[in-house]
Image (tube, rainbow, N blue to C red; front, side):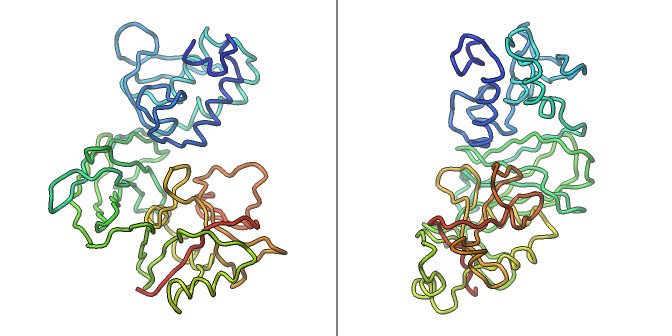
Length: 342
């Protein structure tokens, strides 16, 4: 109960649940060993799993809990933070309002029925043979282009990810992306246990202070290190800093490039260093729409990565793949998304 009572009120109730959900949404699986990591992986929220003895019988098996009238099973060999919260929120430890609990957790805890699978592997450098820390690994359904999972490698270049799909695909396209290396890609048959290892060749160009990515349209894209204000002539400043061919990226170009494949969009976002809630990465950048910088007044268009979780009150002008990225407008200072011919 002490683990769950994060508000230190003496009772585990709906207020504690709200805090967990807010922190998970904000941190989005960060490896930060925070107070809000319930299953002991060190990651706050997200899909990372670990062994956890939910019913305290000194074993790891399949246990069940009644949630909103339905029996939900949990595999103690692979428990997420959400599993821990759901199991104990519907146990005798919960001392709060049951209606408030249902409104907060019913969708999360009952979830979507589907097929669970685990993928693991190692990403290594071709020249040194060393594991590559912090490489991004994502998977997509080749038939639909929809994203299935995304994770990062640990200190030794290893990764493991458990995810659930509503309908099992026949194959999964797995991509490995690491700074200063060629992108690795392979197609593996979908099973409950999959392995995808990569040996990546160095490109001879690290990203440095700017992450750069070329999606194959003849241009290289990146987000600036410098922030700009809405009253500046941003296109002119970009030409001064990066050359006469530098352009502020057009929203419709992003739509044309990535509307058919969420996996390609995720690869692009990671490639330019746009990650939601991850320290050291940008989450938004100025763009244009239909050649215009401004929606109205001083509200400059920008792209923000939301991964489906749009904050309340956020005005969405357009989006891709259920708000994986959203087009907004506001007069805040921020970085710019730029493209240059390769």
